[in-house]
Image 1 (cartoon, rainbow, N blue to C red):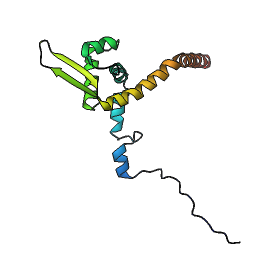
Image 2 (cartoon, rainbow, N blue to C red):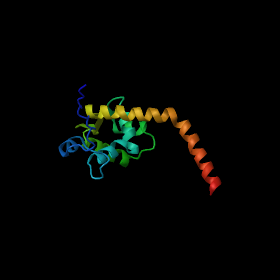
Image 3 (tube, rainbow, N blue to C red):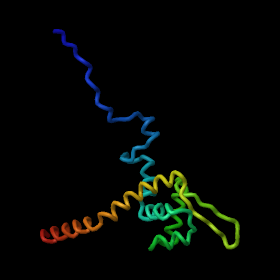
Length: 144
């Protein structure tokens, strides 16, 4: 009987090429620029702006009312960051008084959909999380 040894399958490489890392990004690497974009999308106000704009184009004042608790300054800063990242489009109309509208770009719609999924999960599980937080606080209060 003749036995033939087959080549062993190689495990996928855990290190991508440098060009692949630069093309895709590596959010777990400290200096990767994708971390900055992630922070814009997942900041407290970034998440809420993305979700609010999923329903369509809105004026600044509409957004501010829809997103309770955000200051004008924070909303303006968040919108500027998201506009710079190509997530939000700002349209200014030269009329008196000035009229400015904000909308998601196609890239922004994709990101907003992902963020909305996370928000839906949080809304669906917040009671369980709060219960676990309370249990944790009780356990740690007893041991201290």
